Image (cartoon, rainbow, N blue to C red; front, side, top):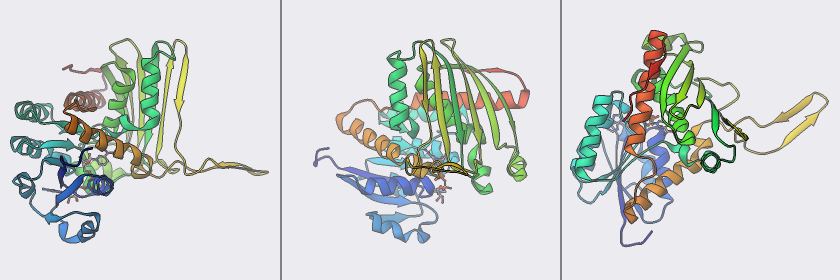
Length: 337
Ligand SMILES: NC(=O)c1ccc[n+]([C@@H]2O[C@H](COP(=O)([O-])OP(=O)(O)OC[C@H]3O[C@@H](n4cnc5c(N)ncnc54)[C@H](O)[C@@H]3O)[C@@H](O)[C@H]2O)c1
């Protein structure tokens, strides 16, 4: 990046993902983290050591700061739309965490604001930037396995989030499986046209009090005729389980879990390897860095962002259809753009 065109960033929401982006941006050249807003900034004084210049409880201070040209929205999802609209009106480029919102109408409202303002908007579907998954995408595009017939994704967290998070999360499809819905579209290069969902609450019965589940399977039909299946669990006791397989007319490709080392210990008792890396912070940190770098490059070079608003709309529509399918016990068609 050139040095005369600094990225002056404001981060709204400094929880798990906000802190991760701050810590990654601190190491990037030509990026100033001018301000962070969070109602709990009083407990976040350590952020000053990451180069944050100012902290505020009110995100409006970031929107109103004319020097800040880029806003990272890492607050809970139910705040995204209002912040997007205000930041767009103020002419800021926006990086927003997934999902955009829980409602199609609200998301379209934010979409209109972005189009009107003409600012860059990138959504945080970080897995697109994972070196393994992006390689699979290239191999599928190059027809290395011929025509795609089946896509399988296993996506399991090591532990469920706390109930406070669950209450505001929008449910397993909107909060968690939305990443996998995006991967399904990204890898297949085809739209999901129909879903069928089943699920249960097997890990923490209190999750069902929030009208949510912790274990789910969704089958997918793609517009090109391929089929897919995604399974999610909020608790894989052995670590963050992130695997993918594509199967086609000329072969298959597998992506297995990343581990701390590649060591395999074989004894009379058996063969042991490392567990998968613990969670998203460990597993996808390179991808989180890459997505932000590409976002900054798109701003600097005035090119298209890699993960667009429309990708967010579609993943959200698939998630809503999956929820409807779970409730009705019927396959549900996905509304196209
Ligand atoms: N891309 C990913 O892999 C990924 C991973 C985790 C979370 N997320 C998304 O990121 C968002 C945040 O999730 P999280 O896990 O960091 O949650 P979190 O609860 O850890 O953090 C959210 C933070 O926002 C703050 N906040 C609340 N109201 C605010 C306001 N009015 N202004 C500013 N800050 C406010 C909270 O105090 C908290 O510190 C969600 O939309 C979630 O879906 C994405």
